Image (cartoon, rainbow, N blue to C red):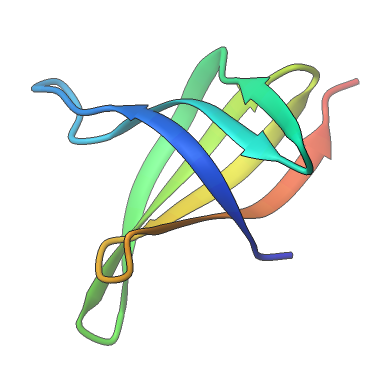
Length: 79
């Protein structure tokens, strides 16, 4: 899965990027916790990855720094 999403973020001193909320399938999903952040390279482009929890699931989001596009790469319900 890799679908484009809109993400509301906070830029700050502690972390370069903190996602707070995103819109997926017409729904706004509030992020309760950022579980893990890592980055990877895709050619010359840096991609930031975020594991976040909110509204009953853990989501994997990514941000492509060249295209400035956010994507959702996975979603797993929390039981």
